[in-house]
Image (tube, rainbow, N blue to C red):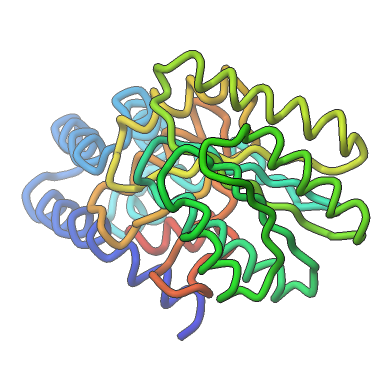
Length: 298
């Protein structure tokens, strides 16, 4: 199964909800003021924020009026174009090497699983990988990561439970420098974004990376559960304020009917989605493609 097929399957719940609502809209309303009001409500129902939904509808209204074209296919194609523009307002960075990737996020979003999938992704690119078990808080977190590291066949650096996470990062970086490793992936403990002392811990780990590998390309990625919907915006804002996020890894798309929140994150916060999970297997994580995402939800 190709990537697009996997992504399309993962987005099925979001697509089914949007397609059904749009079909009802086109069968019920002529294209006019009431149509655009209802279209805005449909977009909000897909967890696109009110601000972004309003902007999208206004752009479609203006373009449709200018072109004097008002059939269903024209409006649908225009909707795809405008939504894709929102997704690409935040430029997706190219991963360069040597790379340090630190995954952050709240509890239960799938960070440790994502570490394993990312490790496998970079191995498929022909890169050497070391993972750092810097989640020293959660019981058996290092054991869980070890299982993923073994599945991906990559090295893991870990300390005892309760150790200083920054010490784990230090040792992993030292090992990577000695061995000329291409990619270091750092797993961190899940933390509530409202807990200031936990955010300070992330800042400390970031300083260790900046100090020990100043020539590395450092990417701080927020792992987001797609079922969170628009509530993800507050998480992203606070993590971004603390450590200046470089992007997002989106998980559990197949469990969500409200994948539209991604469009608001990219457009309003300027934080791009870089990777997306498209299934539960170790190979089911790929670079995010905005065009394929929009084709998958409409």
